[in-house]
Length: 190
Length: 190
DNA sequence: GGGGTCGCGTGACCTAGATCACTTTCAAAA
DNA sequence: TTTTGAAAGTGATCTAGGTCACGCGACCCC
Image (tube, rainbow over all chains, first blue to last red; front, side, top):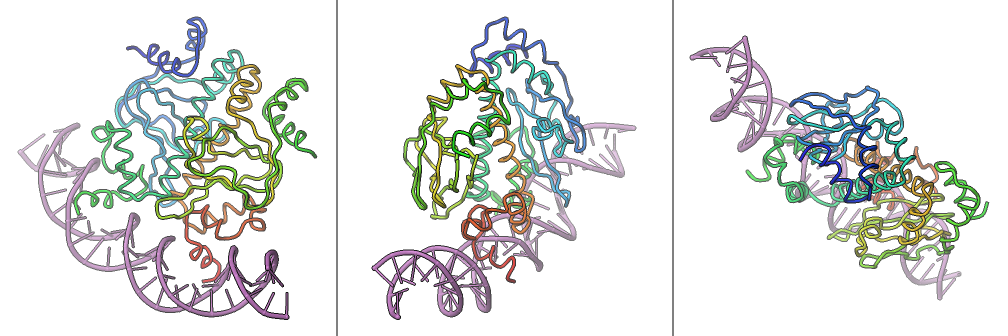
């Protein structure tokens, strides 16, 4: 299935667009390919695109004052990613985005999203639901961080995204869970 | 300013509705008053309304297996609250909602929100932005929890919502920050 | 084919915050 | 006026997870 088909199928799950509407919407996306390790957004950049992942795996992450990395999101096929805060508030990036594997994405500019949302009620509906899912997922993760220990969160993550186990090195999993790699290692090698 | 005016002003910040459109939208809300301590949603309930706070202060919270409370949100004037996960997924509540002070709210049912979103593109636009702000705020809080210590998070909270200091007892602030009340107390009484 | 560096395990020690137990204060109910 | 109970402070102790240091195999890649 090619990029266009993947996006179409993804959107069809929440909004009913005619073929013409979808083609029009799709005409605003730009296909981009990145290789493993390539940086898409770094701290301080101006951000004006969001990215729909067609294939591969990206990570968005924050580096704190002590140079420790915290991973906000692993983005795989059909996930949307960017520095949403910088994108919507038109401020400089505080988070970074790069590629864990080679990746293919469709990029959409902030202005085009808003333009098409205004023109097509259906598209605005789609984006409301996409944002809603993101909100609920983030809220769930916050609850998990506050109420579960590292082992529970690790197993929850692998249960929900088993493919991560093979794609993503453990030190990045640790950075997602917010623990040191040593602690994660000791969970199953006591 | 009465409830209708407060809601109107709130919505006008992100969506341009004509007076007739707003009146129509407003006709789907129901005014409700609650007193201090009153429970609005408890775990296990079916949830089919969300609440726009006109006055007073509510809290939404989760009770974990060890009976420890974690506060997801303090909701004050112009905030929206409910168990969003249960509301959107039509599942039983996992979080509770009750009143820290006497409160007045406007309630809107899930079905009515979806109906009016479909009928009025403007209203869907408003809800997209409301959800978006919630998403960004939750993401910011997650980053703060993972990267800052208790003292930093406490001061960040008070800086953003100074009014909480007078309205909300410290044990609830601690439950919001995810620490014990003893630790919070010791921050300024070492 | 020998020097990096990346991922991962592991031992020894350290610390932020939890837990438990007791006390004080103060306001509201009775 | 007395009683009660929630809010808050505080000392003593415990623990999950962090930090630092080192070892070891597996790849790249000149």
